[in-house]
Length: 310
Image 1 (tube, rainbow, N blue to C red):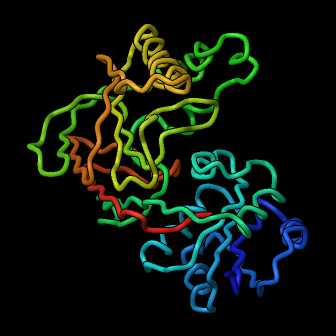
Image 2 (spheres, one colour):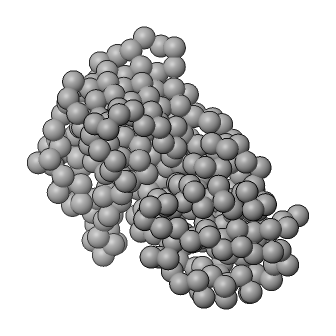
């Protein structure tokens, strides 16, 4: 039974009064403590303070960056406190993959207060940057190349009219910037291999906004990382890639087909518990949609069942 709830909220995303009203509607008898994030502390520090204050449920109200920061500390500290999410960002990708209500603060708070917790893995990446080697947690995906959130930014009206072809319009904007680069990848204890592509995404979750399913078999609680290599360059390759993502690996699977993921010459998938990558030249690198700098080398591991999310 929850005895003390910590509300960690991003003031740039909502007003405290909105959250207070939703908490009253949820009817919890637990003690409530409030912790506000800042530019200097996006969530890790206030999460540490909330746990030191005795919270056994941490409810984070904010976007993907705030959720990631709080989840990172819960996982790193191996805390037994459970996590609730009130998604208030643009992507809200972990919330979407876990079925947390979007654009409904009252429903999200109610789920956080009364919902059953499920185990969720947390990925860890050690990445070489100009400032040195850094270690970060992530709950959705990391990688280099086309921003996964940009992939999801598709015109809804066009999507209603043109179906999966609508995704070509948004992805097509990145064609000129899609430079194929070689890289070396090692997975688990297998021998390393040389690959080529403009995008490598390593994911804990597989679905994005707009119905786009990058990695439909990615399970945030299976103790494994799923990865995707993209090398589409021409309009035809992009069209074929989007058909594979949205139709073959997306809608058809929702309709009951459970075949292996479809790979093409411009798209390939894999799965591992550890992934090491080196590049001959630095590429922009992102963690859960946030670019943190350029890198030529990074290593990724998975912490199985690192947190429990309601």
